[in-house]
Length: 383
Image 1: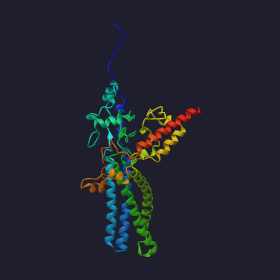
Image 2: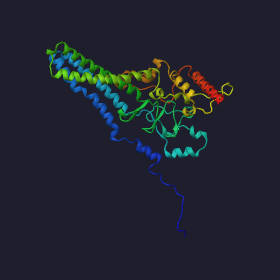
Image 3: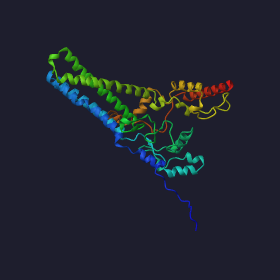
Image 4: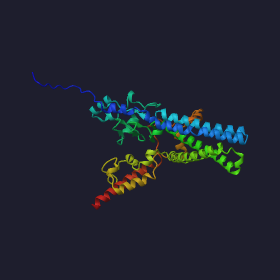
């Protein structure tokens, strides 16, 4: 009988496997919600001083309960609307694509045919919370051009991005926001995020204006106002709300520009975002095709990178005009659409998988591909 005996058995999955890592990675600790709690605290923090200031100025000094009630209701209404959209951004799924299970990934690896990679997702891979699952034709189109997520092991739509923090692909991902409970801003949460920015900006500007009016009245007639209560609270609110107005308004203006041009933060900041959409040049064309398709950033020379960055600053792939761009983000339709828009921002149109491109986009992409190929040819001649 041998001293050692070797048998081939199915080894158990180690604790550091990709599946377990994804499960552990997706669990959020209480620290992930600390920025969210801080955001709620910053929204509610000015209200005690605001109530004291308005009561002292409008009730005691001016004897105007109507103006006091109007200013109080306006501030609390804006705060409530900001909190509703904040909750929606924190708890709603942004449009995440469920990663394939390990068994499904192994089945795809064993199957060497191309149909395995282009097969439509099964019931376990449906979009979380989406109204309609993508069709097989859409999956075929999505997998063309190398748009395949190696982390989730599934087809990735053209405007989706893999979030390294959430470890999932997010439809039309804008950015990952730790202030919203560590959640991503994507296809299903972007309208609520814009609503949150607008309400926070409006709240900060409103409190700043009210506090500034109290300070102006104090300077004009210092003996008619409570010399202790109103000035201290008014100065505190004017300073704090003024700073928040500048900060939040900056973010709001930037995202207004993104919506008007139909871009996401990721697309706007990625200088080489256009590379994945470059069409293959025809063999009958005078310009030779690029050595790799789609080209990668590290494959480009300095001159080619300059061409791509210049075109990225001019070309907007999904720009349909500012009216259609805003309509795509905030949707429309049924009679209660306005109520959703006011309460938390509403919902975007479409399913987040396919998007219409602007006019003459394909022509400009082909022109860029020919310019890159011509620059490549010039570099080879120079060598």
